[in-house]
Amino acid sequence: MLSVLAVDDEAPALEELTYLLREDPRIEQVTQAPDAAEALRILSRVLVSGDRLDAVFMDIRMPGLDGLDFTRLLAGFAAPPAVVFVTAHEHFAVTAFELGALDYVLKPVRPERLAEAVRRVEAAVCPGCASPAVDEVVPVELGGRTRLVTRSSVTYAEAHGDYVRLHTAEGSYLVRMPLAALAKRWETAGFIRIHRSTLVSAGHISELRFDGGRAIVQVGERLLTVSRRHTREVRDLLVRRFHHGPENPQQN
Image 1: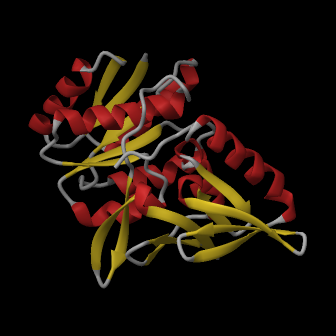
Image 2: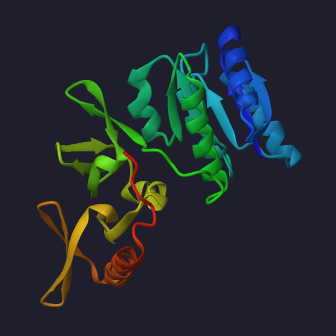
Image 3: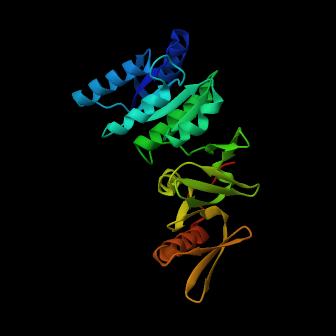
């Protein structure tokens, strides 16, 4: 059972969010805070007392300390809670994702969408306890606008310094996030590291071949080299998928 904190400076919005969270059978306790500063004080008291706080469901635009500032300050905590933004402002999505937000729910809040956010919190707190995932959506900047890219459409990702380039059949998109963080985030969704700079969706691998001692996988029309370090892991994964089917099928 989860313990969460609901944060919003508008009383009606806070009451509605609290009500929806308390209706979810996976949540045991919901605490309220009228702003991010009070949320920090509550979090500090909880951690000092030895209790736990699994997630913070928080608005972004608030007077004084806003939701993004709050999330940045969580880096100072040894075991910070997950953050789910609940906001009417779509254009903060990319920044929220870069800061490591677990989910981004737009107002007006739909109960089924909030339930999916709770599922993601549950999966983060207790891997294997949550029900099967729905397709994750990644916000990316494209020509000054925010575009939503589904995880299932990503065939592979490449490291570009502090960024990751996501490749899909329609094009490629840059996201400010280390590849290692993305690999951990998508590990249970069937993505596998084939190189220190390359992450591949196993479901999009159509062929594994060996050329002069090097392993190569085919993803769509692209041939991607597998490092020696990852060759055995990739081969074993593909053998398991062949004999037993996908372990983590992508949902569209």
